Image (cartoon, rainbow, N blue to C red; front, top):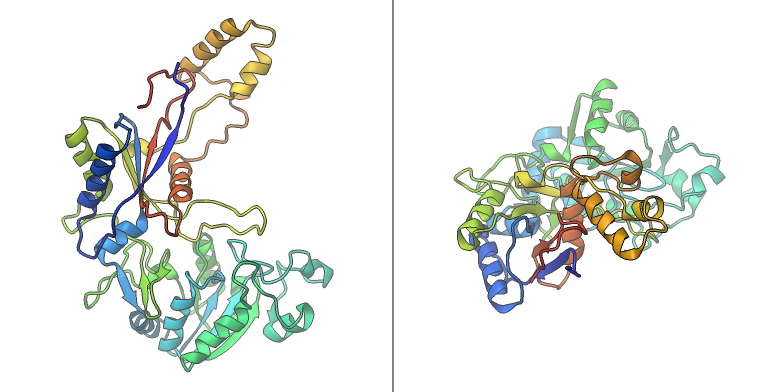
Length: 403
């Protein structure tokens, strides 16, 4: 009987540089690990590759000046920016570019927190102050008067309205800040609006256009096309970008190489040639992790999985072993119960009763695996931009040992 189920390994690799072939980089790191560590490839292994590895190899960067130029071209002299997340890494440099290109910016922040949970005040404060967050607009002056002169982010220690104002004014632009959860309030300040939210951007843009906005774009509409050797992302634009120095942003990676071939399929094919095994491959960004203390989501990328091989489509079809043990095997001798459990699991693909499946929420494989990979690789100094997952698609009835 196999005594180990799913295993996850962070694969250490050197630094990828602009112009490197990411396919050969990933395959080479896996080959070296296989030669030096105690594992062997299996069919349906999963290889996770962090999005930053691909983006760095592509040299997929844009300058603050590029953002400034696109902002000026899109909005003219001024625009309202609605629902940006509160982040030094994710939004501060975008705001710097907007401010450099425009003369005036109106920033409308959602409250009591942004869409991923970064707070501007304690959750219970609006109700205690007699406010309705679904309807009420607060000027910055009202926010300060009602909730105190400063509210500091629990992790970064920043007063974000003050921080964002300083960024805008440092570039010579004028800045007005307000708090609201209704995007149409932006039209009180400017008819041209940039929706800076991530996961709710389509609804925000739709609401603005229906409310009569002269122009309503999202971050996905900026830096979508190549220009003067600069990076770009045709699907997500500035969404998923990260600060890379004081004058440069790393964009979310493109999923195809210059020949139009998808990286995930190329990696799958190369590993098939080398090992004879068919593995699944995904490029992952932020995992869908929520900090249980601060209530802040880590999902600041537009998607968890940027691209993936077809074998990762779908959701798990599982049964709950605890239910089977409690409802069907209570009082059955241990050896007989074990055989019953294995039989139940082996027929799960043919039929899974509603009760036996309760509690096994059918989340997408790509979101589950991308989150697992992101939590494994981390974003600091582990040096493991590649993750090997084995045994993920097995269940308790599968007995082939992993070695």
